[in-house]
Length: 298
Length: 101
Image (cartoon, rainbow over the protein chains, first blue to last red):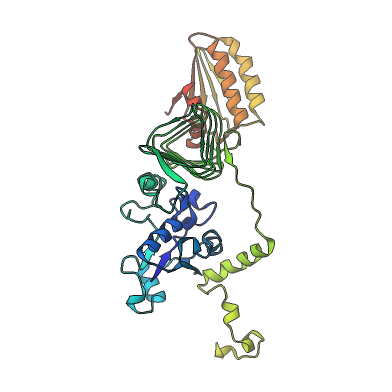
């Protein structure tokens, strides 16, 4: 069975979420938006999933791989702009109905998490947090063997380190390889993504801490989304780049883009804006590329 | 930075940023006027776009200096949302009376 997943391109209401990567790969409780969808579609019987990506398709492809971890074949199609589900169906869903998952799972815009259509992800930072909070009990699936509910309403990765003097208040989610240091208070309504560190005496409440994020000692992250050094209050929608790393910073190693890939990406951007596929030059007939053509022939 | 001494009220305003660049100057200026024993100190942060740990340190030094004098009220006026966020992150909002006018 086949399915189409449309990756949301830039949403003006949540620019901070797209800073480190496309929204489709934004981290959600140990996975990302797209991985939760692919897992859901695989359970429904999908074996071929095509992702339509307008924003950084190469990064979508790199993050998701070939799909073998879900038992599906993944293909990423780079497009100039985000199509609506109707447009995507008309353009890419050309085979017989029997080959495709039944509607509405055949063509899906990943603007919400599976089964949570009433909780849009990208309308505001508050909606993003509300969707993640609601997703907490659902994120522990049989496929996620390193995560379990250690107390009612408290989920933790098996490789998380939680100090005996730290206080966990349900509901909260503590991802894999997370460190919660002595005296820290986590919850209620706190989500610590994989490899984050909450230092001694710090407090995280009604907040989401992104992966590889360091929350410094005695700091208080409340009603906020903290990812790297970026701190966004989801109530006031105010954003701040925290200047001092001992308060809040990213622990992820800096990744410099490969110079050749950077040049290719910069060249591709205007091509996509014209609505042409990125390999448009390769599709030209050879004589045309060598200049032996009449301009009228095009 | 503008410092106005209005009798018992000391008002500090026009602070575009409070960082390692100017926090020393901020401390020195306030140290010079504090012996005048104001009963209210108001720091207008409405124009302050950027504060770092040095700026927070200067505010904390002022808090400690006023805490030693009983009855002195220290107010932060109209902090911008990003400055308010930093005060909340460091839990310094618990030390100051923050007023939006």
